[in-house]
Amino acid sequence: MRRKWIPFLLILPAVLYLAVLMGYPLFETFRLAFTSNEGFFGNFRRLMESGEFWNAMKNTLLLTAVIVPAQLILALGLAFFVNWKFRGYTMILYFIAIPLALSDVTAALMSYTIFSPNGYLNKVLMSLNLIERPLYFFGYMFKAREFWVIALTEIWRATPLVFIIILAGLQSINREYLEAADLFGFSRWKKFTKIILPLLKPSIMSALLLRTLFAFQIFGVVWLLAGRDIPVLAGETYYWYTFMNDPKMASAYALVIALVTIIVSWFYITFLRAKHLEGAR
Image (cartoon, rainbow, N blue to C red):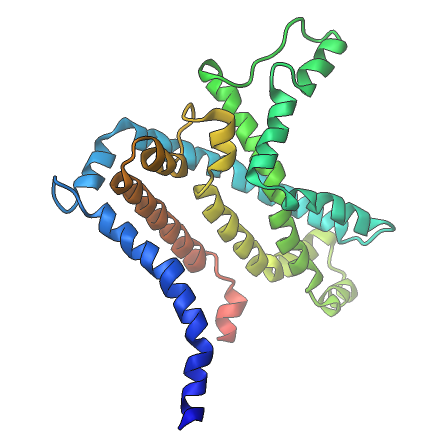
């Protein structure tokens, strides 16, 4: 009789962990988001009618549209370069992976020390007599420059994650396929488009999915470098919860982010699924 309960006791810590740290916060988020004096969807109506929401949505989509493709192209180039396995390639691998160890806050502070009026970039440009006065990258008057500094920081900080996933996919490709292609006289381009790219598609899909979801949750870098000059969805969630002391609106923003990420996940999984894996099911 006692042996019958052992499996349930073994999974009990995991169930408690999920229920307390994920289930309860999720339940509270739903409860707060749909609690309003203006009706069941009152918080969402207020959210949709505010200009800040649409600005935040626009900026989040723009940052995602800039950051994710740039990271994918950079990561693909770096992965093919490292995969040549030349002498000393492991050192290059570690060097590329360094930003993975940095937090959002650290990356934002490093970026600020480069692009601030007294930062390294202005010092270098002034010492070379290329500019007479410092360039300003931060502040409400320079939102376009802030946007590109944020995009550059995020590309630098998170590209190694995409790089690692794609490199792992490249190294898992069976060499016999490439050797067979050489025997049949395939050109490099034909090997890339007919063998490497189709076999790399699951890794690319995983990397795109992860990075797009993280891009929709971008917060630390934007908040530290631009504050609400460039509102984003996660930043607005923090603003409504902390500064406006309105957890109901913050919960509504959180559910919108969750809905958008679910839609993006469905799109990737439905339309970018590797056909050769579908055939294997």
